[in-house]
Image (cartoon, one colour):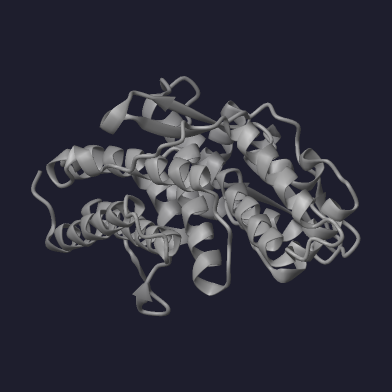
Length: 346
């Protein structure tokens, strides 16, 4: 495949950072190992996403700021234009959240958590490289140095339960290991990115979670987003692949006011505004349809009755419907695959 000049440069930067991450992962030296892996994985992800977007001729510069877009925007655009799956986008966001916590403060990432995210990232990287840029990771990275681990992959729910129990033990009176406990809490919150478009890890949120754990609340109540997440591992040796999965029929989470100080771990309303950020007009614009035709397509696909696609915000006496990237993806897929039966696409 013939690549655009900027896409080719960005791809090389992505491969360079991936090689650095892989080298650090397999290093015997522990000092700074987790930090190096997370920093280079996140950079590799952003450069690869931008290479794909540039190749697809998608704008990657903010017209107002005249600077390149950030990681979160890259992921959203990749879902729209590069058919990145929701579960894969969740892993990319989790890598970014873990990197953010490690770079700007502190986080404790257990070895098997690091392995699952590193190997899952290599799986996604290879898939994007092949599908969108016509290349293969095997051509740039010897199979002998793909991320390996002496520990067998652990089921995701078992891993989360184990970490939650570890935090509970560290917070017991007399332990004096609160810093480590809070570092592990940050890692658990970062992993919620697998199921949410954006996860904030403010000190207020860390405090709420710590308070809930000290009060003896169950993991399902403190980290509701982690319910239903799983990992599929296939292959063996250097050909092993890891993909995170999500059960869309899991128990729904509760939403509370963004500034509610009494709740320790419910999902905050501020997350809703980020998740459902598309107005009906913007949705139609992205689909290159009139608002009326967009409405007909929404009706045909039951978008307006799907809580994953639509949310209604109330501001005073006004009500405003907003839509998520999930709605956009479903509608775009329908345009590509659904027979013309209603006149929507006419």
